[in-house]
Length: 280
Image (cartoon, rainbow, N blue to C red):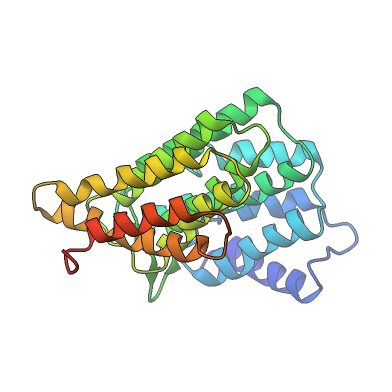
């Protein structure tokens, strides 16, 4: 039995019961070090219910971290022992470290949007890390019966959604995000079944709702998604086509309530028709 791990569970449960307050004499840094050590714990009780929930409360609601502490936390999360821990591996427990690190990055970016924490050069490093992660992640499992959520495509999408909203993001960065979304849909190995399509659609809905790219740019991108429908038949083509078909359906219904959007909705309907072999 790992005494440190067991004590961390006890402490975080007590902190949760105490509305995430610390006792007199306790310090955030003491817990943060251990929470980062166990951020990818294979048991969802510690990883998801306690560590992530505590980070959420302390970063977003309590706002107890100083700007310097959040920057330090961000660079740790983006390092080779966290976001890129055994990147490229499949079907092992390393995925949890990566996918729960990227979730906390999303929390920090949300705070950055409210009050700037990092400069332009640092923001570029964050952007490049998130794009690289979304390109290189190979373990795309969603929910597992015993280990709980891995959900890389969804968790990474949450961070990318925060990224496109940052004031430092320009059209070029948002186009990069659209390109990496397409690569994720075209992953050729994994059909998403745990509503990853909805979390990915959130990014594009955000771009549309906040007018972060010209409408024609998004319409052209939607049109480019159809190309996998014409690939030679293979398992990879099937995966890409089904993922993309489900994504354009999700995005269509997300954009449906937005007024003055007929061109984009028409583009989504056309893409769905061209990707749906049952309507051809």
